[in-house]
Length: 310
Image (cartoon, rainbow, N blue to C red; front, top):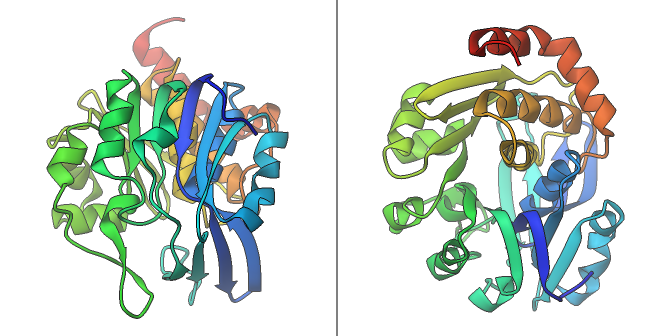
């Protein structure tokens, strides 16, 4: 862990979450936070990754896995960590009940000073964690900005449950974002349509040049006016939590050097591997290539053929 000047390919920003996951398989306790899932996913590609987080002093040990994975970790202490409970009442992994018992202190512009990243990914859990002021500070550094919708539309109700609320700063935030991550439920809330293709187009019209939309079966990317899709292939499905964070982290890591089409396949493969186990992905690069060869080779070959010989 370090607080000195850092230069990296991709940096993630978000509070650590201490997760209690309840499903038919039982109750598990997991170190969570979108910033961590995304950072682990980006490291699979072998790039230089930093992770900036906020947590309670007693939870500093939660970042050890990131450090062991070669991530530059910057910790800002908080009066409390975000405490989240995720309940999956059915076999549909997209049906879940989220409650929050505590929320970490919000980030400040000074928290991201000294970190130079080609791409920043804002992976907040709830509204208020990362403000418009912080986003403007990131944008002023000339980085590509990726952001997850959940950190702006999710608020904690009086009963502790997370729910979606109108987003007053939506247009101001989206004007700063280059790559926007959303899931199907969030996209419908923001656009009023359950058609993911139409929803992606509506969101793209508000500023972001690329939309990464996850849903139960896979991922849809709208980039440069073209759609790219890939299905998830988790064998078996054991780790739904962190799916979207892994998908956007792996997509952005690939986009540093590859096309939206190639990055869509890469993200789907990495996310599939992550969902085969609880917690962040801990799989070697060879496993990603094997997953692509097994499930996505025809799609990849088709895109290469369409683009001509490489």
